[in-house]
Amino acid sequence: MQRFFSSELQKIATAIAGLSVGHLDKTTVAPAKPRDGDIRYADGSLWNPGSGVGVYYYKGASSTWVFLG
Image (cartoon, rainbow, N blue to C red; front, side, top):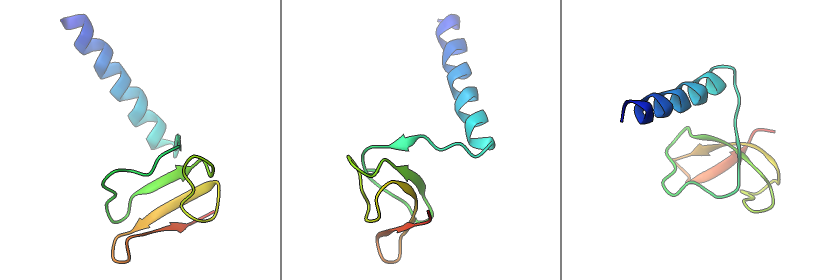
């Protein structure tokens, strides 16, 4: 059990470290419940929020993904 928790904590630490340097994994599906201000890197083919591959943020007031580049 201790080995499992240690492994899971290491996975969490790795994910947080990636975020702290600004890394975004490419996303192939839209989030099920996006929240205002969410940021995603869309692959542009399996998930294309409107302008192809790139970084988008979710504008909750209009329920749209806004292309950042």
